[in-house]
Image 1 (cartoon, rainbow, N blue to C red):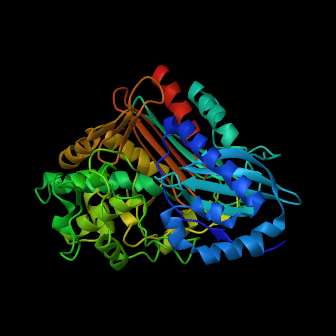
Image 2: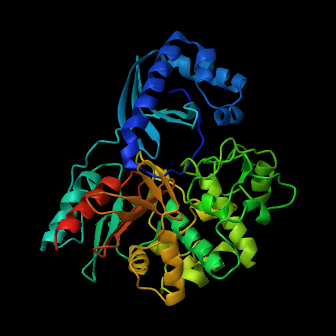
Image 3: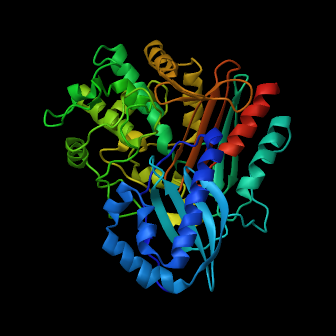
Length: 474
């Protein structure tokens, strides 16, 4: 078949289930216009649907060339069938006259197209024919509930493996499903390493809290105090962007910088460095008042990480190890893997089941660079329930305090406060190219769920089912 050009901006995104229906309706409306303009071969109208960042990544002449030479020859789009919405990106089965393709669409904050990808179609709902191996003994009620919750996920052909940790009544339970790499017949266990993506942000928020509690910074400090003098004031209406608004996603700083143009979609963050970051801010002007509106931002938390490195005169990885991992004996949690770690590092797979390389970071590392295991993240869960040395416990408690509320959205420092059942729980998830993480703790009933997958398909539904069940079952 003809070569298909893929043009997109890769992003992390927090998966807020309650906003999905509204978001999907907006994307569906844009998708219908895409289909109409595509079939009319109206390149100008198609391009008008795209946002500022997309236009910078793909100039109009290049877009026209792709349409004329690669897309229009495929014929009309007869139908675009919605399949799923994951991390703000909607997946459709685009049925052409002679071929079926996958169409991915996401929108920016102005409701313009940010991600627009045509790729060979793979049925993400296709099921396996064989039974997935598991370490679950299927003896207790908990065992059976976990197994019931995961079957719809792990039975998909696109998924690979799961490592699950449950903390309940002071006891820890681990379950492995599938394989650490397709065909190796090796079950994931509690010591299998995964990328945890945006769950990293919660570690960054603890490092911020530690700097606050040690008198190095204040949450209300303007970010310009810690940035090069060449960067103009980041403020709107006299209200400055602060360290707190960086951490709670209300800064007004966009999800990703406009000068983020990766040369490698398989490892998109590896070359974006401090020079790129500061170059972006030299020409950036906030368009709304900080502290008023929620907008999830990898850029904001990445910037916070750079500031914390400078304030502490240390690298992010050393801060992570010294402040959090060593006190909690989380020795399997790290940024850079050693040669001895590679055998325990699960291979990642994209949402369509194809292989994904690992992701590496420079300036935006504080938003998603950590690798960890279920064993370590259960230790992290215990710490978030109060089982930590006094100084670190004080830091963690500060991150749990709600610092931003908008309608039903409640955010501490990075942590999101959600209700999978009746109780409020402290939550975050994460995704990279080939991995997905879920982490939730119920502070009142003292239980937690950790789910690590070596596939980018979201695990929120599994986690929500388990959290609801644990809430009402002893």
